[in-house]
Length: 321
Ligand code: UDP
Ligand code: MG
Image 1: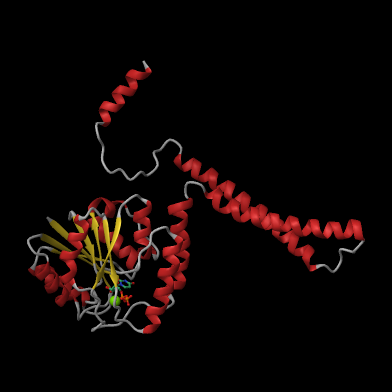
Image 2 (image 1 turned 30 degrees about the vertical axis):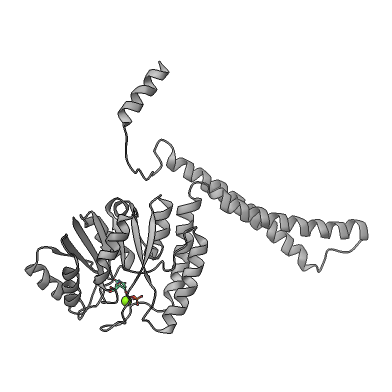
């Protein structure tokens, strides 16, 4: 079986050689290809990859003109990967290739994606704490309970890889995307090593950007079929609250003669009603757009297999006649 290793790399000159040796030592009887995506490195990373690729035709390189980020790097790697099974790994040696065989065993249990779980994490506290919060929020946002969404070490079956469309910081939510497409997602604990060479490319601020991608992914996985459910709900709550406040003030005014001047509540009520209506209209517009996009075209279904499609078509035609 051909295994593809997709490895996004940004300034990891000291780790690359060791990583390649470690991967090759752990593929067992399988054939392999190693796809490095040089995500705009400014050190010797590319030269080293190049040397390795000259000596070993199973090593391939995609080089970005500048830094485009991990999601873009993974996506390009996925486009070119040919293996039945596709692994993603960090280039910094924090993921240990010794786990490859355990990933394969887990995939064999019937999973399409097996995600690593850095059970014992060797990173500083300012990374592990936000990461805990991130995993807590993400697991509750999507109905897929994983202990570690954002582990770089994952194994995929090919069809899933070809269906993903990653951009922004979406690589953190791949398990949720896969799950929403109907693929089976599993998790195994993996050994995690401390970073020996080079520097981490991310700090706590990544989760700030990640928050917007959380919304995007939630939107495209859950609400893309019915955006009005999301916007309409927010709008209704807001408009109802506004109406309630206005009604309260109206009663005070009409039955008890209280003046409406100098009542901050009046403005709040008006604001809530207007915002609410805005949200509802936004939802309706989104519905129109979604409807337009999907008219005359099949929804992007995750097709597992076709069975006797031609036959069924024929039967349907006969039924009609
Ligand atoms: N990386 C990348 N592009 C980026 C940032 C990171 O290709 O813009 C690579 C990096 O070289 C490494 C992996 O993504 O192979 C994970 O990055 P890092 O180790 O810095 O993240 P951490 O382990 O600290 O979360
Ligand atoms: Mg790392």
